[in-house]
Image 1 (cartoon, rainbow, N blue to C red):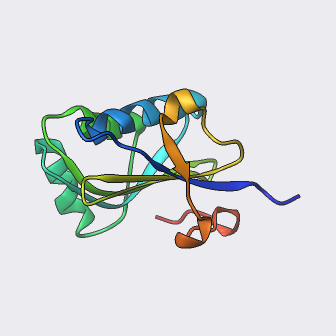
Image 2 (cartoon, rainbow, N blue to C red):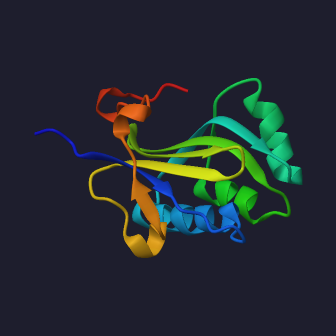
Length: 140
């Protein structure tokens, strides 16, 4: 049976903080997948902790716990770029992409996250993203 894969682009209001939208999604996913981790492939953030992670991401991919990723979203600063993949039991379950501090794309496997979690969004063309979770075994 083929796994359902989906992609959405969040509609961010002009006065809305992108980090606030990320918080809700990350909190929801950490409740659904309590034993999960986030693989950080790219991050550019201006907060104190986020800046340390930016330097680290320039060197390598690395794992963060959901609490660590929430810390980045909650600190005084801005997330400019982010590529974070939720992994549980060596399976990629969700990917969050932030570009230029204004755009959030969320990709997932299985059922679409509830609208109350995602907020307003538009369905994106999955072909625009190079993501094939059904073929992945995580090796970081």
